[in-house]
Image (tube, rainbow, N blue to C red; front, side, top):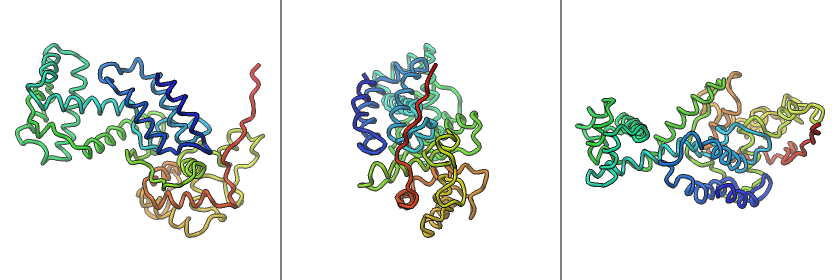
Length: 335
């Protein structure tokens, strides 16, 4: 039972101690995902994704160390783990590519029979295969047989069964790039429909948090990448009776992630200058962070830069800031 497995593992994961996010993600992929995606091409579909996504949200929220509910798509981008549906689609594509590469294989003949019968599930998977191969032809044309280009330009599914082994071959690097492409498209559609003006960049690369970084520090670093953190600005919006001011202890402006990294007088000037430079570079913003640009997305888009992660760690460890590592949420009496 996946829920029981995660309940057992979560005992060793906390916001302030226990397993780091890299270990949680590795264990999740090894123990949970290996079971979850076994035979997923057959049994995983929209009707049972609700419970799976709820479990995955608990895992990703724990790995990031978020206290308040945070958008699941943002948690996935922070951790570098694509959505369950995207991963399942990639696994199906790889299975079909392997089966189609050998015309004598029983699985290839089975696929051909199902196409002839018009099996909608198989046809749907083959359309995903066609999408990958069209992407491959666009980005890795030398890896496609010239004779297969005409087949890929068509919308017909049946000719896919006649493609050469060279065209059907893929590498780990290709799969990662295509995964990020699918993930980015999904992210754009999902967040734009919810009214987001700025969309973070999806990456399958893990956060380059140095070995030996404490759990407390890495959680504080990751909290700079989403809005619902424990900084004064957000807590003031949550409950003004408990947290009476949104200002930073420096007194200049509200305590937000971008303020700490770029404008707080309690932080070393050299760290602020370098943070501004990297943020503008990673977000193609010239020399100024635009007011309309989502500051947390701007920080998140820099998260695969090792130098940026190191300076974020230095900022959150600044003693004069005394950043919260935990809070006591007020109890709400339900009548």
